[in-house]
Image 1: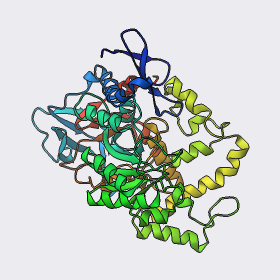
Image 2 (image 1 turned 90 degrees about the vertical axis):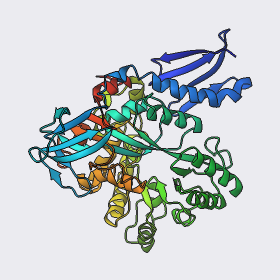
Image 3 (image 1 turned 60 degrees about the vertical axis):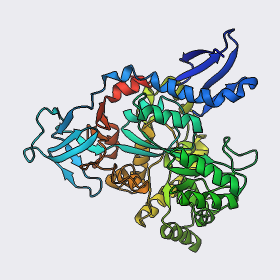
Image 4 (image 1 turned 120 degrees about the vertical axis):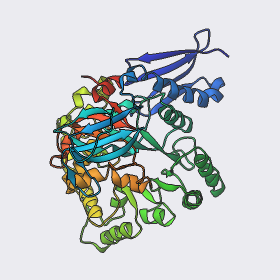
Length: 481
């Protein structure tokens, strides 16, 4: 069977892929909907081809960037970053006039100017006056289209946890990046599974414990790091998912399904929870939906999360966007808004609610921030996640909101560097700038330890020892100058 493939650009953010038969009859369209999620339309008689075309769409989409990516610095040689202020995100210690040597994609030496020898023949890059940070993590991404790859890197995000995607699509995207055929961050895959009913999401469903075991094994065999439970899974299936995942060395994250509480989900075996709402919803609430902080029930919830070592990605930025007054300048939350691709500006500019409603929700949002602060102060593992939002930059906004909630800039940065590395049992490989770790780091024009918003001022991104120019990456992803 011969198909003609077309790439259409200019209608949405990014490229759409279309296949026709040799007579010009439409066979398949793979695009994105108004929320940025993937949308596939297929002629019914060819439905069996959809998984293959999804795989090809991912590969073709990533390959479109490779010609523009050819200007990246070759990582085959040795690179020395000289003179920058190096931040140790583990301790907060700062090394002035640092030297970081990169060889074969790894950090081979860390020292100071005048305190260590720079290897002969190394490419020397002077970064005096700049801050050197580890690459950022987004622990709640949805890699819905190829353009997210360069957009993430441009914002300094070098690792993402993809919290639920189409099986064929995310496998193909990750493979393209790992094999050097695409541009993007490291991807950790969390395989989504939902339950029965009209509200079930996606086609990967588990209606019985036996089906749950089969789903978990399929994800494990395909290199997934986690299982993500969605909102329609039944309690007995949640337990079966968690038991099989733990047996195979996987952890479990996700939503708390309808009809279950946070405590029931965790008692069933869930290790992590997406969205702060699931902590909020089991606290004692006042009649205006704000938290009653003096009630024993609220304290019991916090004690439970602490004692069960639950990992939480709060996604505060999602709630800020929901509760935003549409009369407020959107640049308050995203200062680079006007450089977003035009279709994304249209998508986001009216997101929020009328001013009078937004005013009523302000105390509730402050409570969500307070929950984050209280959990942090009690030692709960908090990891920065966005659930999409402004591509790449929503990670920065999440960190700004953590500081607004009361964390220090260092503590906020830790939620997007060393803490997620620990949560995913990857601390020996990544999460900080240390000898032997992956050379994933950012060169920043500013000092995020003093002003967290400076984390947006990314001058150069290093991933696996390869240096990228954020401006060039944003151009690839269709962002405006």
